[in-house]
Length: 184
Image (cartoon, rainbow, N blue to C red; front, side, top):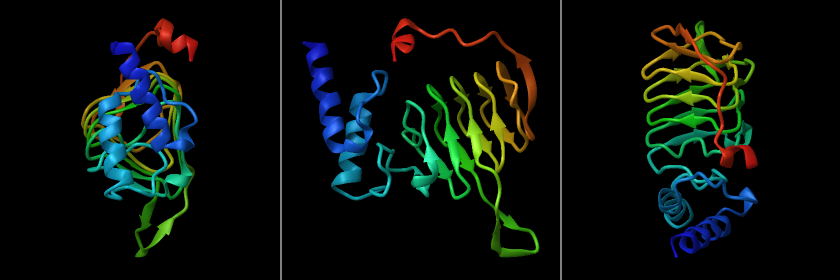
C-alpha cells in the first residue's frame, strides 16, 4: 500500500512539473508536493521548472543545469545563475546554501562581471550555510562543510573542504553508491 501511494505521489509530481519527464526515486515526495502546490497555485517561484522551496530564491533558472536532484528544494537557498550553474548527479544542497555565479564590478557596483559558470560535480554535498562564489569548480564527491565560503576551485574531488575561505580539510575515499543509485 505504501509503495502504491508513493507511485501515485510521484505521478502527481510529474503532472505538476511535466518538464521533469521523470521524478527521481530519492526525492522527499510530500515536501516536493507542498512546494509544487505553492509554486503552481500561489505562484511563488513559478518561473522555476522544478520543485523549489517557497523560501528559496532562484535567479535565471534557465542557466542552471541540474543533475538528478532539485536545487533550491531545501529552505532559504539562494541560487544566482546569471553566469551559469552546472550541478552534477546526486548532489545534495542543504538549507541556506548560496550559489552566486555573478559578482559586482568593484569600480562600478551597477555593473556585473562575466565569469565562468559554477560547476559542482557528481555525488557532492553542500552543507548548511555554505556559500559558493563565481567561477568555482568542485570535483566529484566534494563535501563542503557547513558555513564554508568557497572562493576558489577544488577540482580534484574525493575531498572535504571547509572554512572561510575554504581549504582542503581531508581527502576521502571515492563515493560508494547504493544499489538504487547505480540503477538510475
